Every structure is written in structure tokens, then in C-alpha cells.
Image (cartoon, rainbow, N blue to C red; front, side):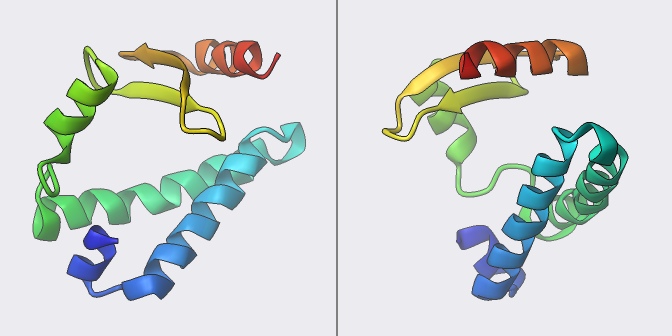
Length: 110
């Protein structure tokens, strides 16, 4: 909430951004819609990057070190798979190619 308030986007910006990202995520898992999902995801990234570089700063609210410490993350990027109760089911750090990420996601689902 802090980020969108600082950007002057309020709740509508937060909800709108979340809906766009959710749609993009779902499309990435549908074989016939992967390109559209990738396009939507790539379309949201420039806005996020620009706002961090120009208005927000790279680290917002000092949460980077806190999250790394809380979850014992060795590096960025970090992937945390969290269940409905807030428990970390699996975590992975560093670069993973797309096939490795899909394999990791499938392992967690099964």
C-alpha cells in the first residue's frame, strides 16, 4: 500500500495493477495464451522499473534486508512458494531458466 500511496495511485492503482499481473500469470500457464501473458507481464515491468528508478528508490521502506533475514534468503532474485497458512513450502534463490521454474512449480503443486 505504501508504494502505491507514494506514487499517488491509491487503491485503484494497486487493484488494477494486481488484476493485470494476475491475468498475465494465468495466461503464462495456458499454452495457447503464453505470448499474450508474456506481453502483459512485460508491459507492466517498465512502469515498475521506472517508478523505482525515478520516484521510489530501489529499496522501499527498508524491507529488503528484513525479508532476506526473515526467510533466510541467500540472494536475489528469490522465489518463495507460500501456502494458504503463510508457511514457506519451498524457496529457491538465484537465476532459474523458465523450464527450471516450471519444473519447480509443478513439483510444489504435486
